[in-house]
Every structure is written in structure tokens, then in C-alpha cells.
Length: 257
Image 1 (cartoon, one colour):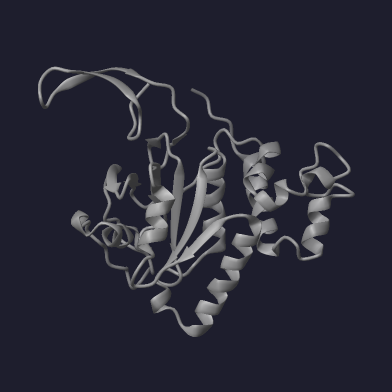
Image 2 (cartoon, rainbow, N blue to C red):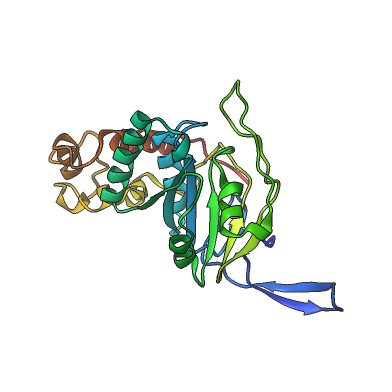
């Protein structure tokens, strides 16, 4: 087994700088992209603008984290750059995600350091998100001594250039945060169709009301989830993304080692 950032290991020191990893202890969880293990909290950072906030990307990140039984927290940055109309739209999305059961915080030029430090106190967290959303800026504000490099936004693509090249655990307050490279591809390896519903809290909460035990909330009759969507108890876009990801899981090609 290849060691990952965040692993607990048995280490034998040869001197002050060198030694050997003798064993890697069992992991609580692990992520492939970014490669990191034993994470308590995932802070998923998205921007209100530059690049524009995407519910599709947000939901995909959430599923990738939920399927590993990691507690996700949503952060939306660059609120200070948004127009009043854009701010109202983001605030509506915040309400939807909070009603679904997620923690959401909005940030502008400054972050609420106290709230974040309390969140990660004594824990190991990962910060992840699309390139250019302000992850390094966010960490620099939490700990100015880090002086992490921040990137510019490509005006032609509206995307950020990667400024984090590797995964590194950074001391923030009384916790650790793994700063990770931005990434855009998310895969569903290990996630079975019947388990996707557990990655959408508002769907999981209503599945017991479905008539059929194996209901996947697609075309089945007497589906409590579809009823909740029709009654606007579940946001249309959340259900649409559930159906999209479910189709991708069903249609994925098997991998052979």
C-alpha cells in the first residue's frame, strides 16, 4: 500500500532527518483526487464569480466526499466581487444547501476566522475545489505566515491556473488542513447505484416513505422522493443532478486490474 498524506504510520528514525516507514495503519477513509487519507472534514470552496458558482460541480464534489463518509462543509468565496443580483442568487443556493443539511459559509475579502478555527479544532481537514476559487487566499487569511502562492484567472476561460502542485498538511490553529491541487474530474469508482441516495441527505431522509424497498427514485411508482420534488421540498436541480450521476454510475465501464 502506497502511503498518502494523512496516513498514520509506524516510523523508525535513523537520524534527525531520515528513517523508514515500517507499517501503514488502517485508514478511516481516503480520497484519490486529491490523494489524502484520514480526513475528518472537507471544506469545499467554490466562488460566487470568476469562475461562476456551479451547482452541478458543487453536487459532484459533495457526492465524492459523502461517499467516503467525510463531513462536507461548503464555502463560497468572492462574494465581495458579486453584483447584488448574483449575491441574492448565491444566498438562495445557500438556503437550499442548508435546508438539505449542509453547513455553508459565504466569504468576501475576509473570512470568519473564529468560525473556521472552531470547525477544524483538533481535526484534520482537506480544502478542495476548482482552480481559481481562492483556496490559497482562504488559507493565507487563516494563517498569514503560510504566504501560499495565489493564482490569476484566465480571462478567456474564466478558470484559475493551478498554484498548488502537491498535497501538504498545514497547521491552522489547533487543526491541520490539507491544501490540495484544484481538479475538475470526479469519478464514481466504488459507488453503487443503490448507495448514491445516501450522498444526498434530503433524499436519504425521505427514502423510507417509498413504496418499494429498492426504489432508486427514477421511474418507480409511489416514490416519496419524487413527491417531495413535485412539492418543492427537494430542489429541482438537486434531484436532476442525482438522476444524472445515477445514470453515469449505471453506465460506467468496468475496470479490470
